[in-house]
View 1: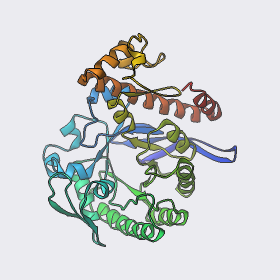
View 2: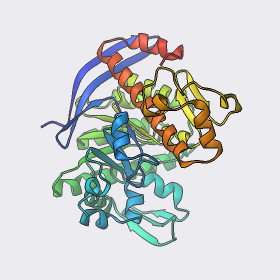
View 3: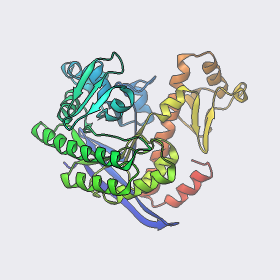
Length: 375
């Protein structure tokens, strides 16, 4: 059975922008998942403050976890020996694991790259580690994820052209080694290639061509939304997706703001993940059509309204802004849970409405309603 198929494509030119939005179906462990899709982040195999049942209630189909963090704690072999990540966590839907390359570079104060792999010290206890691209595939297979990412080298912004070029070349070589290792295994998980290249157009094109020549089952776009301005991000994104095969899923890593998801879908992206909804929730910031509100604000002390009038999530169906503000002011754990439920539901509902707009060829109406603060 094929991994991915496109149900509807909308290709048009509007206001100097090439729109190539699409709706598809991805098949994971016998389940059909509609795309575009947003994936909540559960770095340590748990989305902070919410249970698997609550994730299902908001419409989550895939959780993203991090192989680097799970390798360090509790260890991939423990997860394997306890039946794999689905049994270990009680989540019977999809799991995607990022390789952890970004975390190694951002969290480890002491790391060194060679052609063979990465040596680094744990950000937790300072212990020394060395991982090759082959090691990372084996770790993710032991974890038991459904979709896995190869070891790559993301670069910060700004990064010099020469450094970005070197990182891009190494990412390509590691991608070749990763898929070779994956092909030798049972291939129970689906391996995506990760496209890097910083904000340099020729490097993005080079990496995209090299990875499509390798012929991965799917493609992730990494190294964006890490400091560049939004017009640059959107330009690089459009350039990259233009060169990706139509029959393969496309995953934009680490993006979760509604306006960014909208722009990415218009460029033909199918999958997203971000800590933004859950992190914002723990800081008392919740999404509403047209923006966000801070529940700690004194304006909500006597506010009987729910967070969002037309929202049907568990939080909005049962609690007022005043009560939620009280919970945050008293630092009750329930505050984080309720705000997280709403934010995840909002993002899931936003993507669902966007998916419906693409399918019904009502993108322009969706864009206008979004700009008016109606979605």
